[in-house]
Picture 1 (cartoon, rainbow, N blue to C red):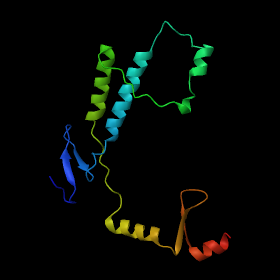
Picture 2 (cartoon, one colour):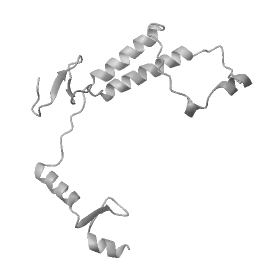
Picture 3 (cartoon, one colour):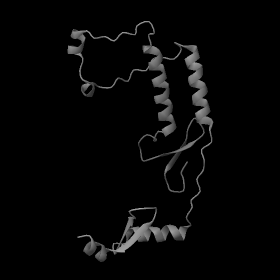
Picture 4 (spheres, one colour):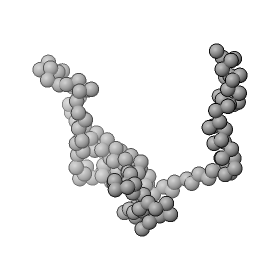
Length: 151
């Protein structure tokens, strides 16, 4: 299926339309990244949780063989699901609630003429647009006056 811009469109499993850029793989949605990160953090916390052992390992031999944090390669390990039914149910409920929320559609607050005028002002090299020192005001100055005043 081709879109109006000529890019290839793909219907994903969730029913969303994702654009494929060139021959590369489709970009991941930030929600998918968050879901993966969230699930992994919870599963790791459950996997390494040991309430009976509250002591830290201060063995001298162990500290000599352990690399500093900045030299260690991060582990991709994620514990399998099914170890804790309550955790699996919680993860499923939270991710379902997050994924089913409707995204707020933001309508633009500028009309097309205002957008083009703002773009022209930004690219105009004869003027300099700076925020004021105090308050929310904006200062627009001639470039030659600005350079003579502040040099």
